[in-house]
Length: 426
Image (cartoon, rainbow, N blue to C red; front, side, top):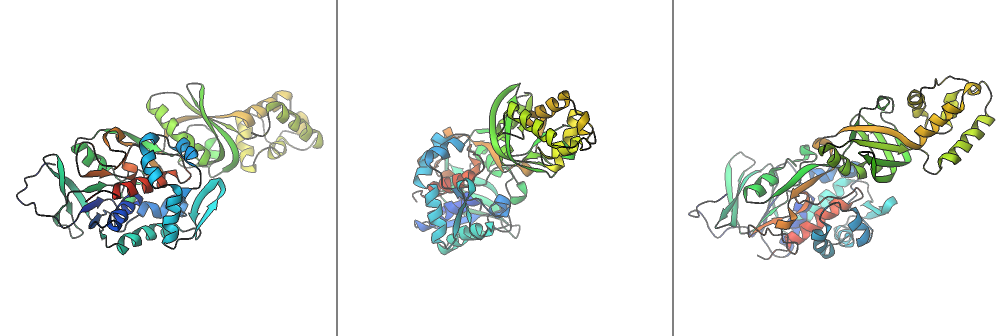
């Protein structure tokens, strides 16, 4: 917002950071370490609320993969991100937290966690690092505007924790308010409004890494079932777009799990475009259809005539799937194995190798891990994270149009962009 400058003074702070999440805390700590006087404004009662719950409370903060693997897992604008990433890589992140006394461990899939298994250790380390460099952290404050004069930043307006309006004058503002995923942690899209008011374009925001909702009649019978080692295909308008291998979970929000989450962004985009979306699940990815056919034949030969179809299904799939699979192929679970026909087994093979779940919707921002879309990266200097439109305005983290797959990539994006934004010159 443009303001008269009659109340402008020299300013007490060199930098004001808006948002106390992973990116904001990294930016604030970096700027303060480099000698800037920094104020961080956080709307919630404590910083890093989202960090504290990420990774089911364990916090997958980064991974140990090389840059090529990192690039492959970033879904948008890696060419913009690569400068920030090369300045502060996953190895930099690991060294940063280890120097702060957080012991780390690398687990399956090259994912890095605090050895304690407590996300709070990462959140607290980020906060303590800021306080060690005398960052002033003000919680329970709501920023109402970024002040500009002649197109340049000169301060922020906010409501403090006592409900009083305040102004802080500064030449540099780092906007790190996150996206709109998990709004209960404070990410409610405020930053998009500020950026838009200052002339920035906002790429359509939508949930990413979120559950996909199915209307399949058997889904209610599979709720709370976790399937390991599953191959999952995303089919859009009858064309396979992408497939993933791993865990699939059925919850009251829809279909989730690591494999599904990696497909969800493309699924959401397809639904928004009005396309027909399906997930196709292969429960026996190690076997082709002929191998499975032979497996079923051997199983049936080893069973007595009084064994039931349910027992056959149990030998091929997890127990909770017996009833829904029987319902899906319309074979009674108590049918004697001696009565099972070749047609019945062929239908069973079809379901085990390609169970189709139509997708009608997606879980909203309240349950999405991250937000896709955001501030257009073409309008941000990739070497500094400074706005190309408003001198003195910087961006960091999820507010930018950058998102990635699960596996520590999104937090690494926050740390890399936050660190580069914090390197600003006073």
